Structures are given as C-alpha cells and as structure tokens.
Length: 557
Image (spheres, rainbow, N blue to C red):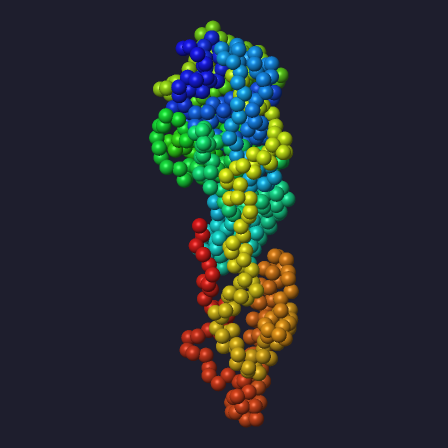
C-alpha cells in the first residue's frame, strides 16, 4: 500500500506495529473494547476511533466523562507529540473538526435528553430506585394499573401519584395483584426523593428523545458525533448507567433488522462501562447480554471503555471482537490476576509475551487485535495509536454556546412539555371534578333544594373537615391552593369522610323526621325536601358502588 494510510477504503486507521492496524467498517457492528489504567490513553483512542467512524459517514454517540472529548468539534492543535506520531505512522498531521451535537440530561452543557417513565419500564426503573424484590413487585403493579386505567406515566410526579393511589387502594388491588406492603411503598417514595435531589426529575418528561436524531450526517456526508456531557451525571452513577441501558434497549426495540452492512448505522462508546454491570440483578444482566448479542443485526456497534476487562461479564465480553488494551499496573495480587486475564483474551502472537507487554506499554501505546473481513480476530500486536485530528481537550463556554446555536435541533428539545397525565387525572379525582360528576348521589341532590339533602351534607361537611367556602359571585366552591401531597391526600380523606357523614346525617334525619311526620305530608310536606320516591329496585345508595369515571383518560403510549 502507498500514500496516506488513513485513506484505505472501508477501514479506520487505529495505529501501527510492524504493519498498519485497521478496524474494518464491515465488522464495526461486532462491537469492541478499550481498556487500560487511568492516564494511559483510552480517551485519545476513543476519539481516534470516533473520528474514523464519522469520517466514513457513521454517526457516533459517546459519553464525555471528564469533559475532554468535547474538543472534537474544534480543529486540532499541531502539538509536537501528535506531529511526531503522525510522521512515525507515515503521514503528515492535518487538523480537522467534526459536526457535533451536545446533549446533557440536566440541560446545562447540551440539549436536554428526556424519557418518559413508561418508556423506562419497570425493570430499569426498579434498578434506578435500587428496589428489593418486594419493591420491584410494587413498581410492576403501578405500571400495570397505569396501563389498565389508561393513565399516562410521563414524569416522576406521575409515578408518585400512582404510588399514592396504589397505597390508598391496596385492599382492593391486593385481590388481583397480591399483597401490597405500605413499608415497601414508603421505601420507594424515599428513593424517589433521593432521585429528585440528584436532579433526575429533569430527565423524566417530554418531549421524549427521538433516537433518530442520533443517526444523522452533515452536509459533507460525515457522521454527526453526539456527545453526552456526563461530568455532572457521574455524580449519580446509577442514573448514568440506567440511562445508557435505556438507550441501548430503545435502539434494539425500534430499529429494523438490516443484517450485515458495509458499515454500521450507529456506533456507541460507553465510558466507565463497569457502572452498567455493578450490582445489576441477573435478569438485567441477561437482558444486557441479549441486547449486545442481537443489536448488531440492527447495524449498531457498541464499544465499552473501562479500566479492566474483568469489569465486563464473560457472556458480554465474548461478544466484543475489536479490542485495544492499554497499560495495566500490577501492584497487588488482584492486579496481577487482572493482567493475566486481559492477556488471555487475545489471540496470541508467537514471540510476544502478552502479560509482560501489558505492564510495559507506554502512554499512547496499546495491544491491538481487530476482526478481519471474515470476522476472525487478528493476532495481537503491540502498536502505537494514531493521533486524533481534532482538538484533544475541552471547549470553552463561548465555543459550546456557538456550536449549540447552530444545531438544527436546538428548538426541538429545549422547552419542556407537561400534558395531562396520571398526576393531573388523580388530582382532579381527589378534588371531585371527575369522580363526583357521574355519582348517583350528587345527581340526586344537585339542584333539588331539599332540606334533608342540605342538612345531611352540612353534617357530612362537618365530619369531613368542613364544607368548602362558596364564591358569592360564581356560586361555586372556592379552593385554596395546596401542595401536591395536600391535594391528593387531604382531599381524598375529606371526600370519603364527607360522604360517610352525609349518609349518617341523612339516616338520623329520616328516622327523626319520619317519626314526627308519621309518613304523611303534615305541616312540613313533601315539597319541603323529603324524598318522595324510594330508590329503584336493586339500586345502591352506597357511593362506593358507583362506576369508575372514564372521562378524560387517554391510552398509555
């Protein structure tokens, strides 16, 4: 081969040993692994591969843990180490820049990323909340109730409202779903409070992320690089890991089968990959392994970046064909075992002591083994990694603001939407705006002007915490603004106790007045409000027997 080694068709230059080391695009969806100790050059290798994919028209998603990947949107600097490395590899260093879309779950250093609670699903939500088996059962009940009622679960306040609903109706729901323990609901509510304190309420909601916005090319037909600003997100490592797993599962579910392509449709780089697997239950590990194994048929490549290959479960590690191993340090017996384990994952090269080489590698040097066109791993080689052409480092706030201002999707996600969902529906029910509308009791008493109804409701209002004040202009009840908890809990208590008190009051008045009147019109007469007709045969006066209101509910999407 002659000329610039970076222009080899269908390949990405990774580095050079005694020969050039390439990643073949047609097997780029067979996944990969970048490992090494802190400060050995993993991020530079990640940037080199990301630039290579983007240059060949493949969109990229990468999590920026330390902030030093954001500079990929700016031209590189001709630093002496980079210029020297390029010359050693047989080409002249040329600065370049790439089209980048910045994302941030908190909306500070990028466009906001949001997902609905329903999209997250009960399995990932349970992991995010660190639920026990019993608590995970409660979460599944909440999701099932939302589906059956047609109540949208969009954000955390919807989830909290549904939890309260399940707690209030535990006696009825346990017949269908099993025992509902109040302490489990309380534990989930406390975990939700912790999650809110970490800022997670900004992630749950709408407009939800359209994953097609990750799969974009620029006007030069180069892939757009999506950078997730994760510096603040790493303060909540469980939220970070759950978000990445959610994205992976959403891609797996929504992208069509495409088989083997000349190049991937999308490539993901997951930095600090060990967080995806730490303390994960077996069901979740099985789901991750299944997605990683099958998502390649959707044209998606997944590249894990972590310090040690042992951070990755064996059934996932076996799916990662393209590997770059930077230096590991063996200061403890555990470190020595890790080095040996890393060495054993490669196809060995005669004459190369892989264990010794891993501990001797310099910064920017790595052991490389890539898949060939037939999917066969190459023998491991000790290679110098090619330098990136864009800036290695951070962008300034002014540069970031300028890049985001030119982004074509800037108006799509920056403004949050809060449409009617479970929280609003349950608040209306608690205020009597929905459930009371079709109540037989209300219909019978409304507008009748009956003395018995008025006195009975007065007694019920006293027992239920007092009747609401009436606006003299509108004739309607006046409501004092309350917090979410007050609206849901206090209104529910008052409504129930007012109903019970009303029935007690009416029963007392019937007995007393009925005895005085002796069943005849007398001085008070029927026109003064006594019921002239008994309830129809089979009809129930118990308001708890009335049918559920269906007005205003939408199917879960």
